[in-house]
Length: 181
Image (cartoon, rainbow, N blue to C red):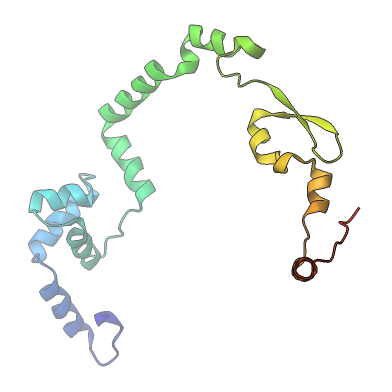
């Protein structure tokens, strides 16, 4: 970085920055005015000058202007472009399903009458111990566990690498071994 070198004095740094910047002092002041007073974005200013927004930001930094972060830029845009925020809020009023009474009645129905109902709780019977349990469809896929209940599933799979390697060796040597019980 040019500004970090200790062998360069302030004058040389300013001259180098001005050579790197595409704008003279008058244009930089004009850009600063557009950015701060007219509340234009760096992208909009860049389009009017035919350069990228990074070039505009560089010239703003040379003038000692703080660059807005994304949140501040959005806030200023909505504040000074009131037509956009009004249009957006109008869109939300018209397209919000919860403001539609027919949709609200339909969705608030219990059980099978509700169009979003997905079958309720499903019975699952463990293949090993025969215990049955009921799960919602959302957790049904996650917790099927190969048709076993949690307790049987937990005890059917070894946990440590030592248990896994010991089981593999026993299988290789055709030794029958019992599972944990």
